[in-house]
Image (cartoon, rainbow, N blue to C red):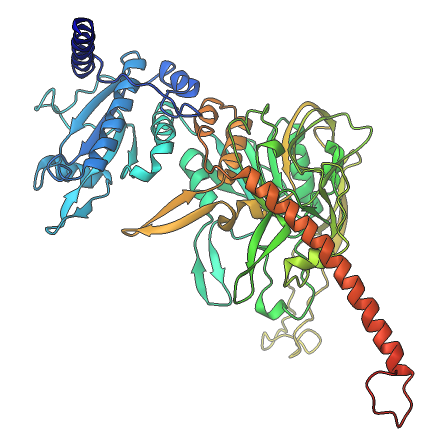
Length: 602
C-alpha cells in the first residue's frame, strides 16, 4: 500500500514539474506526430532564413480584445506567433518581430488599415478584427519611429502583406510566411514571359456579355514573379526573360516558332502547354456553324527537342478516371479522359514534383519519345497501364462520357503526359526561315504643269478621276539562325492546357469583397514549382510541396473500379444478346404473311 502511494505521489510530482517546465521555459516545445511533419520547419524555410541578405521587420497585428471570446482563433494566433518566433531565431538577427494590438481608434489601427490589412467585423457591435502581417525592408541606416520619435519618416524599400490569416489555411502557413520573407529578401523577382492562346488574364464571355476574371494560376504567378505578355506574332523574345511560358500555341506563325527556337538555343528556359483538345478554347457564337479546332502544338520545335505530340489522340485512362455527374439528375458516370493522377503517376524524384499528391487533367494528349534523339527526356507525369489513345473525333460533341468506353481497350503501357527535356539539342531551323516583306517605294515628287497665262494645270495633267492605288510589292528574305545548337536545353512540356483552368484544382469564394482561393489539387503547385526550378530557385519548392490535400479511400476506389469493370463487361454482354434477339425478331417479322395478324409465328 505504501509503495503504491509513493508511486502515485511521485507521478503527480513529475506531472506538476513537467507542466511547470513547459509553461515557463519550453513554451515553443511540441512533438510533431503528423504524417508529413507539417509542424516541423522544412529545410527550404531554414535555407531561406539562414541566407538572408537584408534586415526585415515583421509586424504581426492581432486584435487582442476582439479575439478574447474566440478560442479557436486565439489558438491559431498562438501557432502563428510561435512560428514567427522560430523564424526570428533562425534568421541570425536579420528579422525583427513586433506584436501589435490595433485597438479601436488608435494609431496602430490606422497603420494596419493603410498597410492593406483586412478588417473583419465580429460580434453584435461589428468590432474590427485584425489578424495579419506586414513585412518591410528598410533602407540601411534608417531609424525606426518607435526608436527615435524625432526621426524623419522613411519609406520602406519593399513591403509585403498577409491581409488576414485564415484558420482553415493553417496547412499552408509555413509556405505563406516563407514566401513573404523570400520576396522581401530578393532584389528583383524573375521575369516570366507568357504567350497565351487563351484568355488566362481575363477576357469577355461572349455568350453572357460579361467580363471574365483572370485564371487563378495568374495570381500565383504574379505573386512570385514579374510578368511580361508576348504576342503570338513576335519575331524576337526579350533576352531579359528568365522563363518563357507558352500556353495553347494554336496556329502559331513560323516566325514566332523561330523566335522561340532561338530563345531556347541561347539558353532560355521554356515551359510549354500544348493540347489536342483545349476545352477552354470555346468558339465565338458566329463560329458555331463552322469547324473550330481546339488543338495546339509546337510541331518542329518538339521534334527537334526529342518528343512529339501524338496526332488526333486524347489520353484515356480507366485506373485514374474520375466520376462526374451527367444530365439533370446528375447521374454518376466514369469519365476516362478526366483524370485524377496520384503519387504513382508523378516522378517524385524530380524536384518540381517532390511532395505533390494529386494533379487533375482533362482530355490530355500523349507525348511520344522519338528514337535517335540527342536530348535527355525524363517523364514527369505518366498514365497507368490501363490507358490508351482515344480518337479526337469523339470529343467534338461529347454529351455522355460513357460513350468513350465503347471499344476502349487498355494498351498495357504507360503514356507520357508531361516531360522534362534537357541536354544537347540542335535548332529546328538549320536552313533558316523565309519571310515576305513589303518593298517600300520612294515617294515621287508630284509635277504639275502650269501655263503662262492662268497658272492652271493643263488638260493633260488635270483629271477628276483619282489615281488607283498601286499593288504592294513583296520580296522574300531568308533569316538564318544565330544559334544553331546548345548543350544546356532546359524545357518542360505538358500535353494539357486544361489543368491550368480553375475548375480542375481550385475553389474560388468571395470573402468580404476579396477572392479567396482554396486549392484542392496540386495543379498550381506544379506550375509554380516548374517556374521556380527553371528560374533557378528550389527553396520555396521544398516548402510549397509539403502537406497533403486529400486522403482518398484507395481500397474503396479500387473496389469501385473493379466492380465497374465487371459491370461494363456484363453490360456489353447483355447489349450483344439484345442485338442478337432484336435481329432474330426482325427475321421472324419478315417471315410473316401479308394477312397474318399474329405478332409471332407458331
